[in-house]
Image 1 (tube, rainbow, N blue to C red):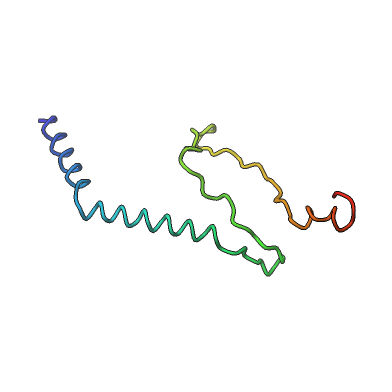
Image 2 (image 1 turned 60 degrees about the horizontal axis):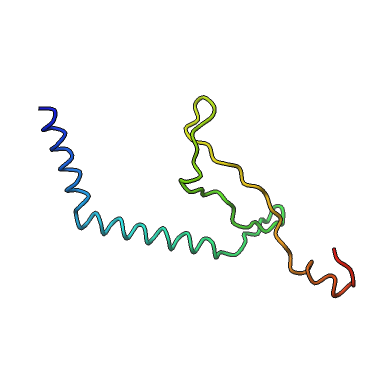
Length: 103
């Protein structure tokens, strides 16, 4: 009895996943997510009016491959911390030509 019940549930799930409408829905949502993430990467920096700082996109979105099991009680997942790196500024690279010394 339990085997037939499990078998019928597996058949229902497999028939649902093989449905043409479900597949087209998944493909369309994946394409939308790719376009959305690509558009977010090309956005101009957001200028914060309070501080006057231009905020660039951050690393809020981690992929599943960065996921590690939780270390403390109540933690499901832990993600590695990102090392902060200062961006190279093009005007600093040209300073030795203008001023005759390296910064």
